[in-house]
Image (cartoon, rainbow, N blue to C red; front, side, top):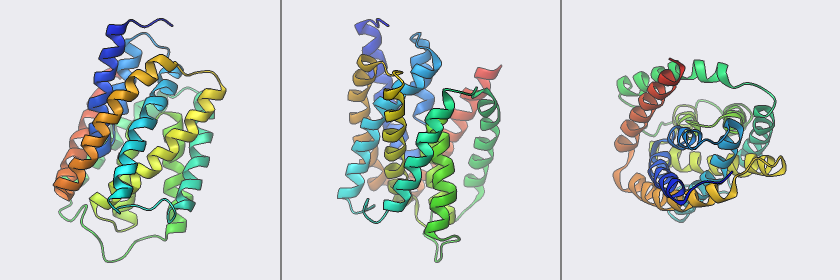
Length: 251
């Protein structure tokens, strides 16, 4: 496909905003995927190209969080392996099945998450004890969410963050850092599948990567600076926005 320079610049701007939002609360794909579709890119290629640009953003944010000692890839090696497997399977599945059912159900789950986070006063505060072991988390939540990310994607960071806060007892800032590490893993491994299957539009993805790098760096700094409450309410706002976006698409 031939995309004009004006459209590439617009997509890069969307990616900057999406990278900022995605690093803080997840859901950046609800901006970038519709933008890619609006540019006339077919759905599977849009999802594949979105993974390319998202890799740059998630890497930038992950690197920042690692340097801030909020997450350690070495300590999370089993989670990384679990998410890699899930993402590969999801990226293969999207090329064989229709994702419309998932899109139809997802808004209602996001609305429920937003309502719960608003009324749960202690949400995002570090807990005294994790509810499930790291091993069980990796084999259930990490694998399932990563499959979803390979298959569709928007909201993955939100789901990882909620899993870490509610099931592993982390505060929002630390949970966001861990979520971004796993999100980077899912992006990379699903991207490999899409590269092998020839679904990537390289000029589009690399143009958007510039915006992603800038937005993700700014978002990561904001997470560390503003703390739990800021991330919590940004996540609620993103959940509501994603729900509205998906419901409008269905109408």
